[in-house]
Length: 148
Image 1 (spheres, one colour):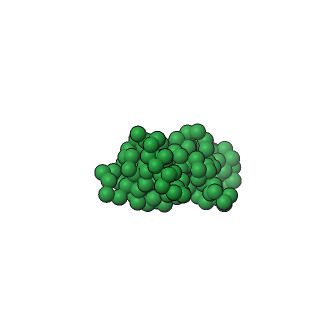
Image 2 (cartoon, one colour):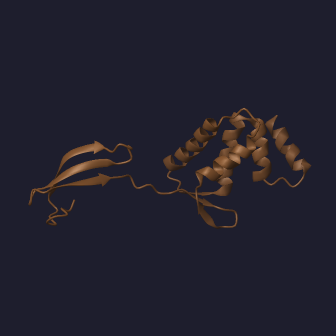
Image 3 (spheres, helix red, strand yellow):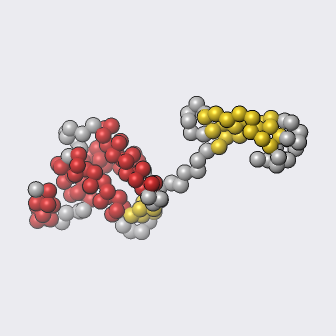
């Protein structure tokens, strides 16, 4: 770490601790050359998730947008907001653990449907009807038959 006072690259860490928000490490450093002390913060650099839409455009993964869509699918169902939050967190974690920072909207939709199927089958059908863009009642019935 370069000393902000004399420019020396020879510094040592005197103290390390997590910040109050636990999103960084606060380090007190001392320059070996000039003995001045200074503070640095170390943070993990997060690579944002990107969703590739059907038309080829890219947009940042929007957690709020996904939860809002899931909220519409689960309206008047016994699915709590915290359950939806956990589901979205699980999906995000899975993608990051697989080092997938770009995902197609189709693949994301299928992940969501797999999770919804375990939580609430009516919400699954509601989400599938919008996501898969059922053209007629036959496609809708075919999806219902798969559930049974």
